[in-house]
Amino acid sequence: MNSHTHTHTHTKAVLNRLSRAIGHLQAVRRMVEQGRDCSEVLIQLAAVRSAINKTCEVVLKDHLEHCIVDAIDTGDMDSLDELKRAVELLLK
Image (cartoon, rainbow, N blue to C red; front, side, top):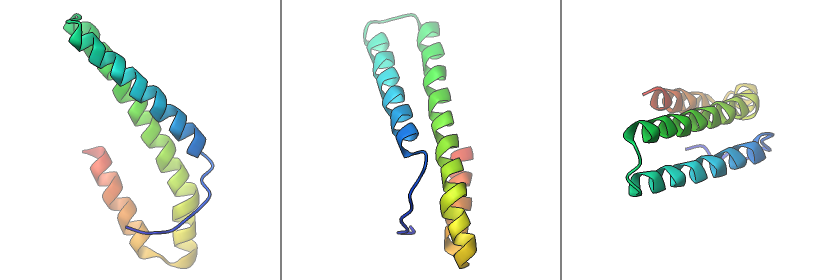
């Protein structure tokens, strides 16, 4: 893993999105504990998944705009390989 440090422009947005997704997931857990309808639970899980996917999109955008730009400028092929691996895992 690369130990680079950068200023990321979307950090606050990512943290806010994660906090909302965590809260939503906790609400889904309560729904399951309360024995709520499976269809309702599935709909809410889909919403959580969508929120996580959007968070991934923001992190990826930030990474491309900062880390990868810097990696290209400095010839850091390891960072490009790490991005490839991360995207492969994300798309699984």
